[in-house]
Length: 107
Image (cartoon, rainbow, N blue to C red; front, top):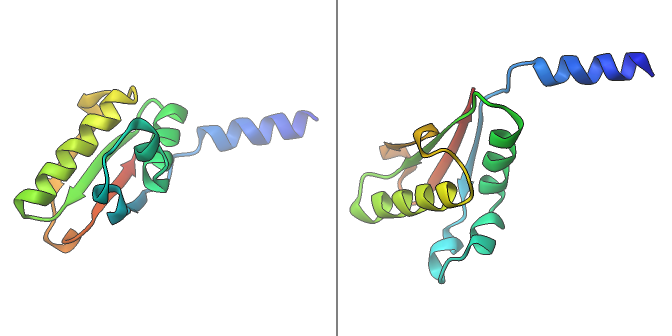
């Protein structure tokens, strides 16, 4: 029993590996709500990582076009509405992210 507790504590203290996931394009095909945004696996992963660690930073990588920038800003606003500290969510233009938003979670 003690070994299990120690293992759990060690795993909790290990640095969080870099995680990245794309936000599905279908999110932008319909009106959004907190429920539809949270249904996205990338958003679920980012919120879970944020809640689990105090040092997590979230970067939303987006294409260089105006529509991609607006989608990234809206996604950031949704994350803030879901109780993520806005100071820990950054937007980054990334030409390789054309056509999709990518959420990078780092420690």
